[in-house]
Length: 443
Image 1: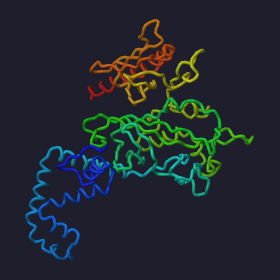
Image 2 (image 1 turned 90 degrees about the horizontal axis):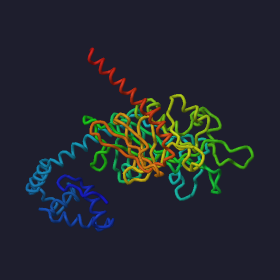
Image 3 (image 1 turned 180 degrees about the horizontal axis):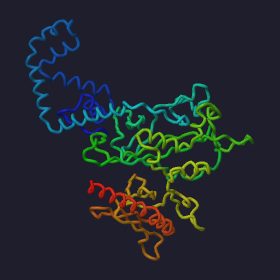
Image 4 (image 1 turned 90 degrees about the vertical axis):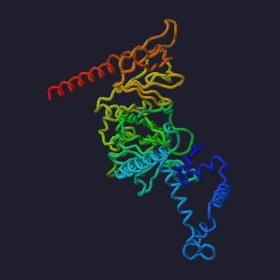
């Protein structure tokens, strides 16, 4: 349902859309009739209508428009009232800033997206054609793709612009502009349900597809920075799922097929090296290019269901920390060795990803960066309880974030993570902070 517009300063589009969706149940004819009736209530409505419809060549009463000084004064008065409204002025300023930022982001070169994106309904609408491109013209990269977002909720067309940021646009032409200067952290991670290994080729026709990872863009909370907004509300983060891709591996020689597909253009050509790159790493590179940072700065949680030995070697170049849940005998096969632990955050049932950069919960997405942590402990809970809690106390206000109902079997791996990875990183941050303070004092 569309939010009620401010009648003092809303656009004609906002008003018409609100009436269409909220009063006339999407009946465009009824909405139009109502708006036309409204115009008849204005002073000298007939003369104005004749002037609009007839222009300079209109006849009859439409030519007698020199007596319309009164309506000009009235229109000017309405405009003056609107400009005196503080909310309206603020809204216009925000809209202007947003437009300027959108122009700045769009000025960056549009980045081509991976060729292995599964197009689904985008290609051959209604034809059921869901096969990868094989023609010589197929290698052309797309420049936008539809993504499903949880924050803000909805489907958006995503375009990525080199070094300047991303733009999300929905079917109502509402735009979310995320400039690179407003971004603090970017995390790429899989949904928990997508981490189970595929069981081979399904009986369905067509190639096998791999689910796209989620992307969480944590925004900078600097008061002097640009506020990323949607429908007038400032956002603290953006979260969306990237599209499915065809699995870029060749079927075996037996003819039976391994349930994995290879695009025709992967079998040779000048783009061969790019196309053989793991899709997670390809997205990481593109996001780094988009926000003007090295790919090592993009936090990656790898999906174990699709991680090969080669893939592990590729990830080793930047020393990425990789958490694995408990794998001792008797552990559930659906959770053992996963990059997360099941838990609750408040009343939300989800999973928590322990990262060197902090703690990530989904869903809904919530990121606790290590820079905000004062202390962290895991293991609270009665001796007979099957579950324990992990409590992170935050700097400054001494508030805490609690992740509850974690299986007791996970205590060992979580404490290893806390003491061997997280606390070491926090200590390193503190030492670097003291060194910077010393340099400032000496200078």
